[in-house]
Every structure is written in structure tokens, then in C-alpha cells.
Length: 297
Ligand SMILES: Nc1nc2c(ncn2[C@@H]2O[C@H](COP(=O)(O)OP(=O)(O)O)[C@@H](O)[C@H]2O)c(=O)[nH]1
Ligand SMILES: [Mg+2]
Image (cartoon, rainbow, N blue to C red):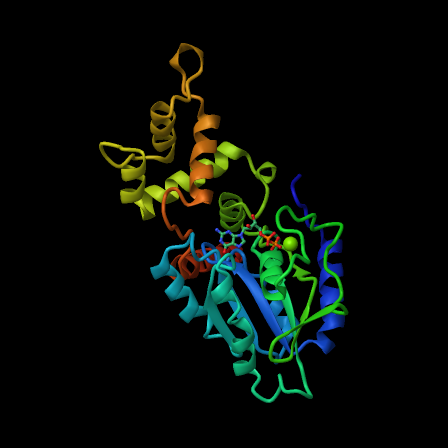
């Protein structure tokens, strides 16, 4: 069930969004607050041009609030961008979005001129949930998104919201940042891309290594450890032991332990966790650029 994006799909998505953009005044890009870099699609900047953009750091109920604040300031450095931390499961706060749209385009949203809004984002960030909340009824199916068959659809069908906001009832579905290895791991850990895209134990190991570095206290508390594990493997073994993931001969079932860790990360059982900070990304990007440079000699 892995969602695979090929250059053909990406070109098609890009073309359709580009064509509909002439009838869009404001873009809402929905991102995952736990991984704002990896869940953002850089194409939005190119496609929206001068149009204002609200970047919703969604699922902020699952993200580290201090890190989300850093990301908001970072994202707002881009011209025309307003960042908003949100959980679209929180209906009353989500319903304030039309007000924010009007603030960004004070000359529109009048009785004469509506503000035409298009929601964009990679699969599983909460686009359908957001549309349904704003519309006040179920228009879009929430859950697994068959991105390939329904890459993106036109902005022709609109729902009229209060204050003359005309919202496209179908989102522009963009591709995740899978060309970057860390990003594909983080997308897999948070559930934005499906488990089969990368080996499951591999994903859990990536997460375990990161949690030891960034959230040692939380894992020690959750799994009642005596001390912080030295390695991701050690953490998974401890989880396996404590949760009875044993095979014959007392061998720890690492796959079961991996499932437990990933499930508890995604459900919020480990608390609010962010998997990227602006500083981490700045460092990783420098390393990538150095690696891309041709050898001198
Ligand atoms: N915890 C949490 N889960 C959310 C939030 N928004 C959406 N979800 C869940 O994320 C999954 C994907 O949501 P969906 O609206 O289908 O995303 P889409 O693929 O972008 O349309 C669903 O299981 C939603 O219930 C949120 O703010 N917090
Ligand atoms: Mg959807």
C-alpha cells in the first residue's frame, strides 16, 4: 500500500495546481507540526507566487510546543507566509481560519469579492479533516489517501464559508520529500508514508536513536528504564523485554518491539514529540551541500 510518487505524477500534480492557481487568492498548506521541513513541499512557493500562504502546523497536539514555536518563527521568514500551529481535530480553533484569511487579504472577502482558498499538502497531514471541519459536514474521506489515482483535482467545486470565503472542496495533493533520506525516515515514523516504503525495524531504529538523543527522559519514564539506553537497538530490546515480545528460546522479537515503539510515537503515548528542529535541518542541509560538491584536486 506504499504511495509511490513518480516524476510523471509530480509533473501532473504540478500542472493541475498551476492551472487552477489563476482562480486562487490564498493558499493553505497543511504540514505536520512534528516534521515541518519534511512535510513541506517546496513547490508551493513556486506555485503560489505572490499569493499569501497560511502554513498550518497541524497535529500540533502531538508535537513539542517549544519546537513548534521555533518553526513558526522560521517559516514566517518567507515572504507572504503566516504560520499557524493547530490541531484540526480542535473544531472551534479551526473555525477561526476564515478570519485569518480575511486578515491576510483585507481588500477581499467582501460581499462583492470572495477569497478563493485552496488547501494543499502531502498525504495524511489532515487536509480532508480540515475541509470537513470548515465545511461543517463530511465532504472528504478522512484516512488513507490513494495519492496516485487522485493526484489532485481542480478548484472548480467550492464551498462558501462565512465572510465570503470560497474554499475548494478538494485539496491539492503534493508529494512528500522522499529524496532526502532523513526526511523519508521521519515521514515513515510519523505515519505520513506507509510502513512498506522502508523496512519497519529500520524505521523504529531511526526513531529510537533519535529519541535517545532528544527525549531521553520521556523514554526512560515510559518504559520504566533504569538508565538511558546507549543505542537504538538497546532501547528496542528493553521495550521487547518489558512488553513480553519474546520468541522461543527467550529471543526478543525486534519486529514486535519496533511496532510498539512506532505505535506509541504515533498515538502520542510517549508525549508530544518533534522530529525536526530548524537548527537540525540547517545542519543537515549544509552536510548535504558539502556532499554534493565535486571533489577538488
Ligand atoms: N492527532 C491528530 N491527528 C490528526 C489531526 N489532523 C488529522 N489527524 C489524523 O490524521 C489522519 C489523516 O487525516 P486526513 O484528514 O485524512 O489527511 P489528508 O490525507 O491530508 O486528507 C487521520 O487519521 C486524522 O484523524 C490532528 O490535528 N491531530
Ligand atoms: Mg484526504
